[in-house]
Image (cartoon, rainbow, N blue to C red):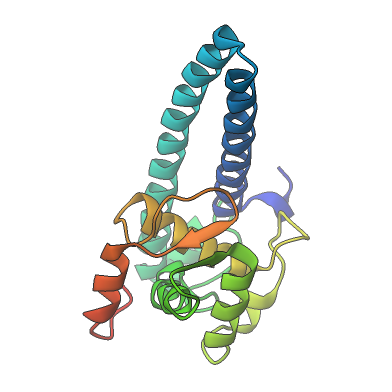
Length: 196
């Protein structure tokens, strides 16, 4: 990797997104095989999908572990941050980027306002409006590893991912749709001013 593509968070995010897209494609093709009566192919696809889901869970565990490492780095002294941030963490320093945990409440609020669910782009647009006074200049820049995604939108997707896979505040839904769960509604109602 060159120096502009060494952000492990971005790499894990791209891997996670690619796996989600592949899972959706496999489900669709498997359903088509089942519909066409090609049961051997459909059965093989189901087995592959199970393995892919298991792999996705491992990636999610890596994402959570990397988040912990970033938190540890952010809590360290400036001297330690300078040493450990050279290669894999990119060049950002604490406070320059809004943490993905700050997106929990705005995402859930946006979903409630939208009737409980919405398409990814529309939810993110609403979240961006809600967070205008919170987001920092660096949040509006493109990811080093992608010219197509703005950093804050990636952070919001990480937040959604955490709420789907770790605490159930959001439902696991088909690609492109976000939906709040009963747990998320309860959390939002009892919200006490914290982001977690």
